Amino acid sequence: MSQGRIFITRRIPEAGMEILREAEVETTVFQKDEEKGLTRGEVLKGVASCDVLLPLLTEPIDREVLSANPRLRGVAQMAVGFNNIDVDVATELGVPISNTPGVLTDTTADLTWAMLLAVARRIPEAHNYMVAGRYKIWGPNLFLGADPSPGGSGRRKVLGIVGYGRIGQAVARRAMGFEMDVLAFDPYARQMIEDDELATWADLPELLAESDFVSLHPLLTDETHHLISEDELQAMKRTAYLINAARGPVIDEKALVKALNERWIAGAALDVYENEPAMAEGLAEAPNTVLLPHIASASADTRGRMASMAATNAVAHMRREPAPNCVNPEVYDTDAYRERMARP
Image: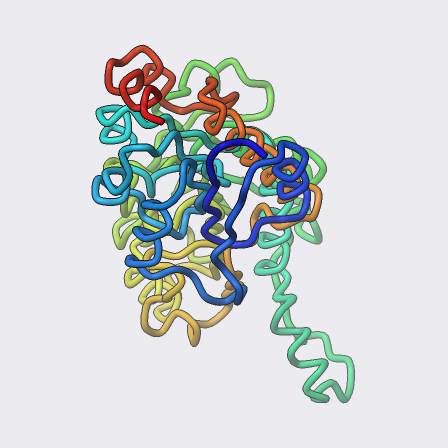
């Protein structure tokens, strides 16, 4: 048995646990109930008695947590994003932070398209109508939706993609099968977009005004917080749909509720929320929405791969080795890291 212990805040897929067993490391999985997370006190207690922490996005990992254990060798998050972790403080304290990048691109792009099709064709409404026993006779006005394809009008629809990283590009590739024109906005990737064969560069106001579907894929930063608010929603077509599988705070959720109720846009599909797991008041009752519980990466293959990557990173932290997916690799050259690793 390796010296040390890994504290896993919530249950992870078996693929990750198998790696930890093979590495013969001691593990503690706190979560017993899939629908309950950890309190702040429980996180602090777990960190204080472990050598490596394996958390999820649901746990804030700030200075207090990172300072709770001078023997903490690393944090191996099972997620691509790590905005719940204060990486600057971690580097200051000599704690390496790792994530699970690159594995959920296709799965998230697939779900983005599932949401787009579901909201455009009103699939959840039609399903509920059917299972409630309300379907009595076919009619030509029953659940009229919108075509992402040229459809009956023959007009090529426009997909606007905000944030043109790996996921945004994967969404664009899928749009080709629907014969769509793709506009893309990403201030950090303008040259790439201009050289891209799938998408055409557009600034955000133009993209919002021209798109039939707007799909959000930016990173969450100070600049992208409430990137879509009242002004942006009013700039969209009344026949347009908004899809968000990125981060909840990119949208001003109260403004979105107003936009949906007052029919500024045709509908919205969300997998993430501004104050997750809570939704803004009125969102659940707003017309023509598809609301999912943060399942963009929720395929068995992808979540299993994420768990395997997190476990591999955790084992590296445990062994005082550079983690394969460290997000602050500069930490390995700091005195704080060397002093931390010298502790028994």
